[in-house]
Amino acid sequence: MVDLDLQTPTAFDPFAEAKDDPAGAGSKDYVHIRVQQRNGRKCLTTVQGLKKEFSYDRILKDLKKEFCCNGTVVQDKEVGKVIQLQGDQRKNVSNFLVQAGIVKKDQIKIHGF
Image (cartoon, rainbow, N blue to C red):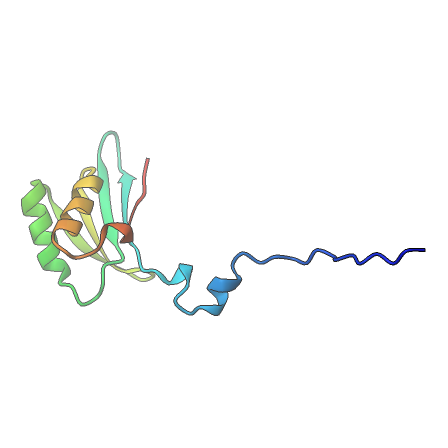
């Protein structure tokens, strides 16, 4: 009988590099911009994940003035401070944050319908 040198396939873990690297794929901080449906055609735009060293009140003031809408800053137990704006302002807010230099374009996640 001939002796065959067989190699058994081993399990490949595609996330092994990310587990070894502390600054891996899951550690990137994103700014999440979402839209929430209220009643009828009304909706809210929420912005969460901004760094804590920014003044949320000044950002809100500039957003309200720029887009002619009302808004508020809400304290959430799980995610911290959240900016809420009236209307669907997702693209406007993302462009504003990038142009103001608050975040980079690849750090923004836009959610919604």
